Image: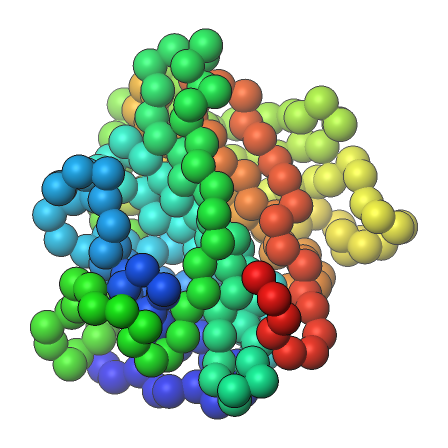
Length: 258
């Protein structure tokens, strides 16, 4: 299976490269899921991100060009998780560009250590290579489904699994259910909106990636509102409070200073 090259942000399918040399290969399913592969060009130490590529899981409204999107990568069974949110825009040079913000959550062993667990930054992805880095060697860019080796049926009976109802301090509710593999799905009912109806008229779907019942393992989740008008991501570990923050809203026009 080969990916088509998009035009004017009509599709996210294909290969993208960031300013550090990392490569991501995306396939947009018609149910809104983003699947793919990620090859990082930067690690804290060799092997920190694993021996080969990492699997990508994300969400973006299908057939809504320029909508806000999110995707995540879980490294080494939850030792760290990165989540990106952003939007595809055509810059003044005519190139499609994914302008993203990212959060990297690293595993910590105690609640008191959470102060050092999160890193934040920005990535700019283009369809042309900006810098050398690790690459897929074949031309058959088949997007992979999330791996199943993290599936742990006994995790449903362990403390700190993500299944069930969760509530934040604003009164919002999230209901999560672990699927086969590292995929977690659910519903989100927000208690706060910029204006009535901004988040829709009913609950929103949640898509997550993380290891069920893995003590101190990291995870990510995201909600896309009203066909990509905005996207919210959450990140954290199962020993600490889940954090939710608005990361990206749909914009209009061309790229500006970053």
